[in-house]
Image (tube, rainbow, N blue to C red; front, side, top):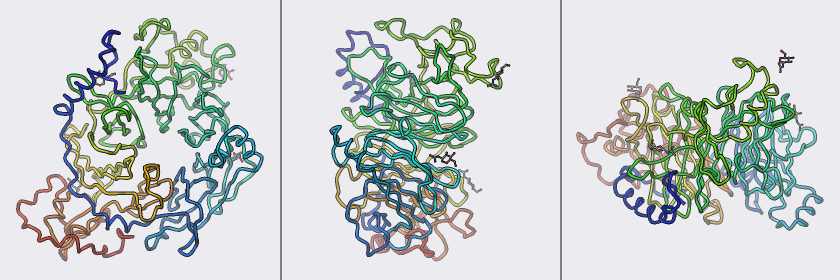
Length: 594
Ligand SMILES: *[C@@H]1O[C@H](CO)[C@@H](O)[C@H](O)[C@H]1NC(C)=O
Ligand SMILES: *[C@@H]1O[C@H](CO)[C@@H](O)[C@H](O)[C@H]1NC(C)=O
Ligand SMILES: *[C@@H]1O[C@H](CO)[C@@H](O)[C@H](O)[C@H]1NC(C)=O
Ligand SMILES: *[C@@H]1O[C@H](CO)[C@@H](O)[C@H](O)[C@H]1NC(C)=O
């Protein structure tokens, strides 16, 4: 359900659904910015040419079972694909024609005993397999974890030959038991930071640090103030902290219904845990805050479901992170992209904490002057009176344990989403940003992926104050999923698992459960033969060049070209005479039409 606010009194709660409906109808007509369609919808015959990976070694080999892709990882010019029982290595510079083939495949299956135990616990045969849920680059190899028939394991693999190095170690608290559960994993300073569930029944959610020189640490067990049915999205390293992005059931609203909200939590990378009395072997620095991605108006409209984030990117002198949000599935469909300034985000953790005095009372801000010292949620070590978190006073540790939530929500840059799409049949759930788009590498293009496999390409235009953008342009909309090649077509098959930008080849890699599709970042050749169409596309990757063609402009190109990304002004140009569809010609250097 959509939450409009945080301060309704109980009698109003009963009116909530009605208020929401009115609010929504009102909002849909007034508060939402207009949502123009794409400048260009890409015809499906173009889309069908995109190369796909289907798990084959070469053209003539058969593939008996469909792939169950879980994770993809790009390391330099190599793409690693973690699927069910299989790991693949694909050379990105070695693609010719309409299919990508693997150069190496390694099978990692669960042993008979693990499968037997899994089946005895009532799991289906199809679940009692090894789904690769963690795939990370480590030194010159890979760190891989699989669900291993509900008995997760992790192991090192060589990056080139995909051979397992040494014996596997337990994957507990590093990898979920059930492939359906969301999990996150990153390495930082030699430690593995994971967010997942630690048990078969998926009740014990955890943020866990392990494998490095520091002691293993976890979040407090079975405490709904720390987590309530979390769904983990991503993690980033920034300064002395690791930030985790997720959504969960809000515990701070006294509603009858469960309300999902989006969160960011952080821990100090070098936390050493609490004293022997409080928070021993647990985080002393865990704090979390709500993310506020909303459209302002008479009643606020919130996009509460976070689906993915970008890495931290540098834009206009700020470190920012972008998130794709949506409304819940039982609400009016809508998606939004919000940007958060990392300094501002971190600043929320210097603000007030939230407190619930008794289980029945409402949540209120905790007065700063009553806070124990040192300030809860900080890192020990340099800059602190305490050289280790073990020596923090018990009073402070007890506060941390009982007050993990900050009072304020993290505001989005400009207090409104960068992009809003409502009343469309799909939900946006993946993204990738190119902050170095165009011939001068100074344009920002945002690619969004939908639950139906659609790709939307936006040009991000900064405001004059360089903070927010409002006039973002939807350049292209195209189908990313290839129903002809990827096998069975169903809503599940079209679920986009991840979206990666491969800059050197100017392509996007789209991972679906049964295939990986490679899509060029631009299709300039579609606008060839007509200068008006080329300029009107406003595509920073394309320009009108000598020989009257619309060409892909390599970064740093010296070829003279014309484009008008800012305005797309074509009033001085003559009309085109309908030659478009038949003129799908290859790029001169074969670069885009791989
Ligand atoms: C994996 O490799 C790392 C770094 O080389 C090493 O420290 C670690 O012990 C290895 N882990 C396993 C499970 O073999
Ligand atoms: C912290 O300081 C104490 C005494 O000054 C010292 O004994 C201890 O080893 C230090 N701990 C760390 C983690 O540096
Ligand atoms: C979210 O941001 C809007 C716009 O600044 C603000 O009016 C609203 O109160 C915020 N909501 C929360 C829960 O902080
Ligand atoms: C990008 O660089 C070009 C060439 O230096 C310049 O003309 C253009 O204004 C720049 N655009 C932006 C958005 O900075």
